[in-house]
Image 1 (cartoon, rainbow, N blue to C red):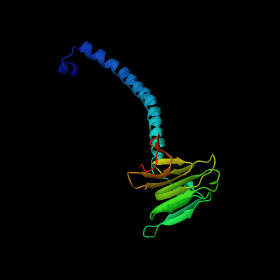
Image 2 (image 1 turned 90 degrees about the vertical axis):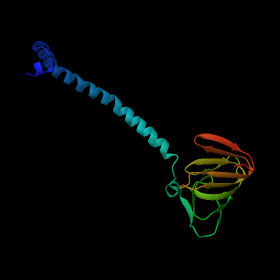
Image 3 (image 1 turned 120 degrees about the vertical axis):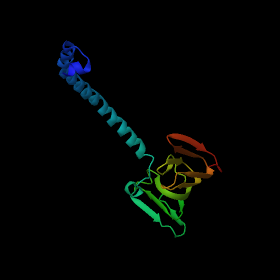
Image 4 (image 1 turned 180 degrees about the vertical axis):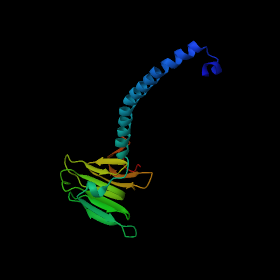
Length: 178
């Protein structure tokens, strides 16, 4: 008998073996309760990480913009004038876009390197968004280098003042700073 092999008296072995199905049932209930608590927690954490991760990746300029321009590698720098009179010089390998309501909502999306000479518009800030940062100005000249396949983003301010938001922190820049 198993009880003699294990060194238990027969009466103790029978008492333990009789409780065994109850212990298995309680163990199953505990596992189900733990899963019921853990599953929503994992879903909440996963959703949070997904939503936070989305804002720091490359932008889909063509999905966000009504009007887009791509300057292929190998071509020369391209000069454009936006509807508000802002001058833009985009380097090769750059995608730039904005929406039809640009005169009301001056937001430009970029993937690449662009120099801006921003036209003054009373109470209408000018915002440049890349996957990694957002720069907002009223009147200024500045360069943004923000390629989606690069680990770095560079902003150089030539004139005026510029607020740069990076990783949810805002920095005020003065001329000739990076």
